[in-house]
Length: 264
Image (cartoon, rainbow, N blue to C red; front, side, top):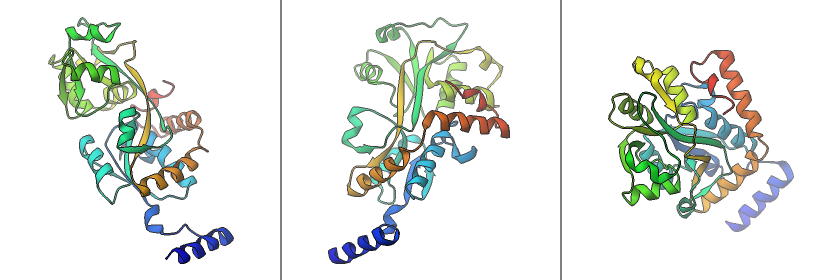
């Protein structure tokens, strides 16, 4: 077998044929509905999905995306053999123990949304102890914030999705919610299920954190090989230029609620 693969590698070098064992070259990824970053309903399946596809195309890796609730996407991406990994994963040092991170796919600005007729302000994380804060189950919200939650210094209320959190905020069940700035913009403009009180939702000017987003590849030999191949292709993509072009495209085709998210 070793001699066969060596001969096949020589043919690859000579004729540019596909790499050995093509079945491993499918980039099958788990993700979630998270517009404007990942969504069935958007061109390219969302901005970050489009970045993944562009990087994979440079590396000649076919891409397929399976959609799940977030906790299930993480489980499937890391544990099921037919997946290469999951995305978009925020970079956390502790996550390096469970997966190989791709290079950055872009950034997510995370902060607090609140109602403008309610009292909410903060300067240090410990200031947040006075509030009940809505979070999404198993989302990372910054190491400092997450540590205070684990230590029961902060009071949080967990929801399965961002839209559930927005509804809780409008209903007065929480004082504020943790949410990505672009995701909030998308929901407020495009989700018709929200009542008129959504006009009272504000995004606090002080950021909680700014995450880089990545593919989290399974931590095995296949995952490492795919990570290295994908990173080689992604390195040729100019992310900010790609983002601007993507949102300009959405504006041209009139996708509601997404064009205004450009230039964060």
